[in-house]
Length: 234
Image (cartoon, rainbow, N blue to C red; front, side, top):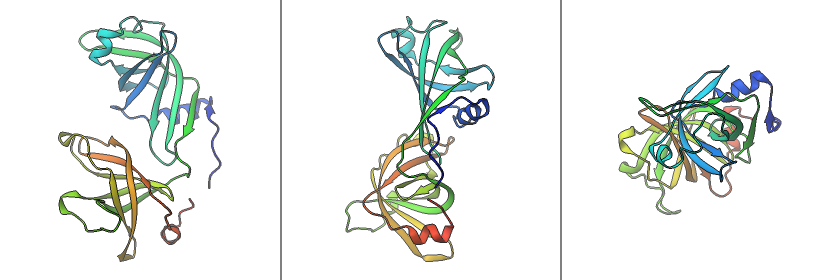
């Protein structure tokens, strides 16, 4: 298993690599510590590696927190980055510019240092494994319900959980699914699916037509055969 990375990163190239994992459309937490710990959820709409990040300011913040949305105001910005590590990142910045028309946009200084914290007990390995996620109504019932069965791929995997990508258009809204079975197809053994109980803990959009859901496996999971077959070191 790879060594645990240092929580504080200040090497320029490493900072850039971490920041490039952010996606346009991600909603980040912007906290203004010096003004009563005001926190605003802002959507990332632009990024320049050398200079700044651009956020769209929600209407409630424009109307209720105009006193903190001023040039020179210090802030702490946090985000969840999915992927192999499953990390929370945080960095200090300041507001460098504000545009109020035609859209309310917030420009903040690009960070020189980023802190990162792992959200998972085990490191996950990147994969492209076909799988099916179904509704789990009870521990003893593994019948696949056609209207609650979703085919997709596992993007990353560990003994403790996985990230699963599936078709789910934006028009469908939030996926209202909690307890699930994950049917993992072992390459070369299509008749022997590995079935794991899990709970959906997070979900994020992956483009306009797909979402990626974070699934935590429940109880003890014996995935040694699957990991060995896939040559995964997790």
